[in-house]
Image 1 (cartoon, rainbow, N blue to C red):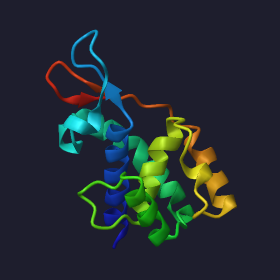
Image 2: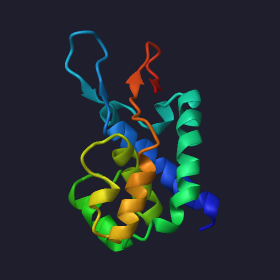
Image 3: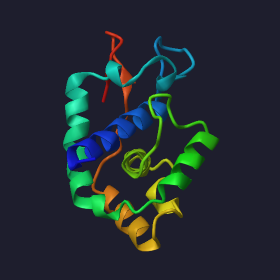
Image 4: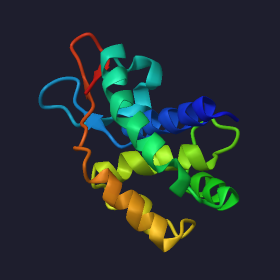
Length: 148
């Protein structure tokens, strides 16, 4: 794949993870729902997608050389934990990196730093690179679109 196709895999996985790791309430006082239960990346507002891409693309470009995952191991773990979405027939290192970028920048307690498929040096580099990006919070708007 070319660089743009690799970025698109990274970004798609990043958006899927952002939905998967986010929750919101539809009505005040209701229990929060996981956004990926009822929404997909097509429900994310275009302005929000552009904002997220404006952060994801520079991270990807500056750090793609450190995505030295063993792809087979990533694929096995994702399916084992039910995280791989049906849109993926495979889960490549760029998709894994997009997923880990989302988790690490949001401080979810997992991410680049705990992926033994990466070299220790690259885990440290990628984790440090995420620190300049603030946490993102997706939410459901009144128009039933997803915003950030």
